[in-house]
Length: 302
Image 1 (cartoon, one colour):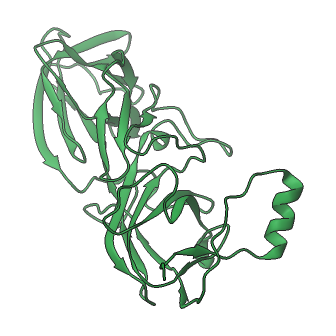
Image 2 (cartoon, rainbow, N blue to C red):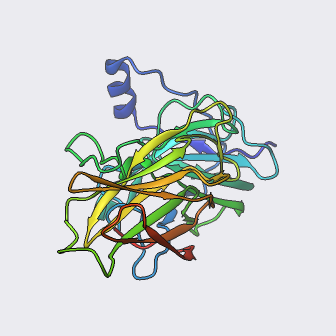
């Protein structure tokens, strides 16, 4: 007898879907139901509080994409036990799927990613791009440029059917650059609060393997310039696709009071790592000094 993981749908949900004209996935009917599948979703860890990169928590209405495959079987775009089902954070009601997901015995591998998209045609070359203007503010209908650039991944392999919740510990798979502006000894006055920071010569597009959570720079992507998000206090941050910048070339540009301060350096943006870069601003824009700080696995909240 084949063991299956199935989705149970209320007739009211089917009626709504029929009215909207949305195509619903084929459902597998179980021979016996043991328990509903539950999830303990955890945010990437930081130095102070559990957090995603944006606001220290998922917001109500945020959705993650969920795949469930028979343990040991390769993850596929379709044909898994659960295929890209959205789980949406409902606040006090917890994480909810459009259709309840139930165990029916067996052992499974669970994969999840954020942000959710309804159209996934490849699970080993899933395309994703960070935004070029990460200082763009959020609106009621759209997350800010920095928030929209973060990609989170979680997996839990070898999960056996039962009453225990499946723990999904998310982590960042891209790279983060934090820039701190420091006033040099001969800089006249105070550093302005409205400085602009740009990261040059990085490829913003990536392909992601959703079975292991690895992001790879798109081989045919073009180098672009990314504007970093202003955090206040002369601090800036940007999310970058993991990649290596060879040779000495313009990496960072600080624009303040109409003057550009260029930083040339090779650099390696490592996956899941927050890099800290301090830039000492002197009176002469040609004498910019940089100090490369530590590599932080637990990203600082913004």
